Amino acid sequence: MTVELPRVALGVFPTPLVRAHRLESALGRGSLLLKRDDLAGFGLAGNKTRPLEFLLGEARARGAEVFVTGGGPGSNFCPAAAMAARAAGLDCELVVWGDPHSPNLSLATAVGARLVPTGNADREAVDELVLRRADELAEAGRPAFAVPRGGSTALGAVGFAVAAVEVAEQLAATGVTPALIVLAVGSGGSCAGLLAGLATVGLSVPVLGVSVSRPPDQIGPRVLELAEGCARLLGSAAPSAEQLELLDARGPGFGTASPLERERAALVLRTEGLLLDHTYGAEAFSAAIDRLSGDMSGPVLLWHTGGLVPALSALPRAGRDAA
Image 1 (cartoon, helix red, strand yellow):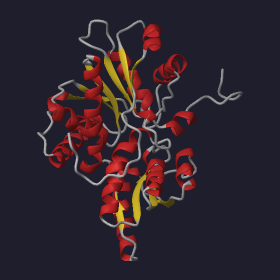
Image 2 (tube, rainbow, N blue to C red):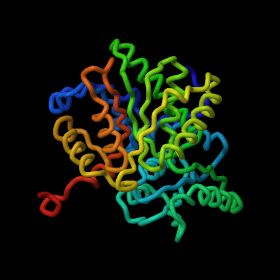
Image 3 (cartoon, rainbow, N blue to C red):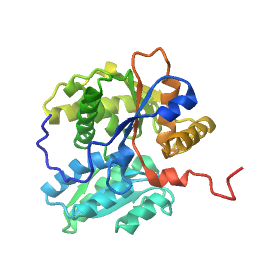
Image 4 (cartoon, helix red, strand yellow):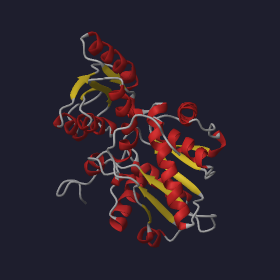
């Protein structure tokens, strides 16, 4: 697949596709593959590196001076956007809800991002406030490029469509076809791009989207809308809605892993040295374990989307949280 769209090279691709042998042994279940987007090679951005390459490419092509996006205290996208904007030669402003004194937002400000608090507005208002802030900057003579939470646009999804081609080539080289691909779903862009990319290469592997933020009946239409828009940008066929299953993994609430999810995250840390955050990673990993079975037609492929700062924040603190 050739993508002729403006792009800023940030990551180191392809990211590894590995077998989790030690974890499989500990679980005594089926085979598990890990797509290591935590090793995307740009800052601590993980899979957010992929959409940012195309979003910043478009921002520069339009002559923007400021990259405007937003999120909350646990956002992986906010610090990734701040670092990537600087690398691309742009300033960054982040419209943020909740407590701005989080590790993620501290990392964003450390690289020069300006935080714009939402005041009493909740996280659902962030995208509208991002657009408003970009308009204010433009009126002040500073061209701005506005991006919704998580970089979830049809253009941002192109980054994961390219990732789907990448993993298809890796699977072909090993002669393995997974029975299922599992990844976390927040604002929907990564899942949408994956569906569009799989359709492009003709890989009809089912996708389990583990929704951590919205109920499936809300995020599902959005994922498919983004996937169709991504396919149009690529000039490829629209993906099939039948390929996607969405699992409601909101549990105790957004950003809070259940006791079982935390227990399983600790297991993968001990066996594979893999850090999982409690907003996306632990939920997706737990769902992948639930689907492991020795009688499946192939392994389960878990797409580890990364996010090192929240993963570190989720670890027990010595002498305080440890039992």
